[in-house]
Length: 68
Image (cartoon, rainbow, N blue to C red):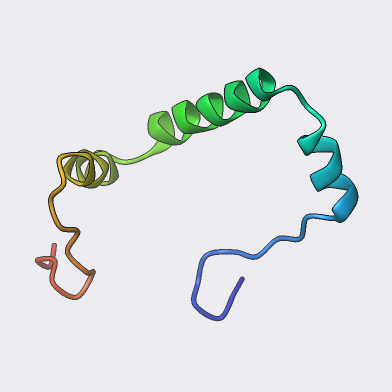
């Protein structure tokens, strides 16, 4: 865990080089699949936030959100 929350991870130079050598259509397919999985696993609240961002609405900070 990082000090701010979330998580940390390390990517080696070899891993970056291997990924960079992939054709662009393979890299894009990976990004699209990752986005699809993230969406499917997200909560309705998170999906609503993403939709608001796509509409250009400001994102409230956690301190501004009403308590549940």
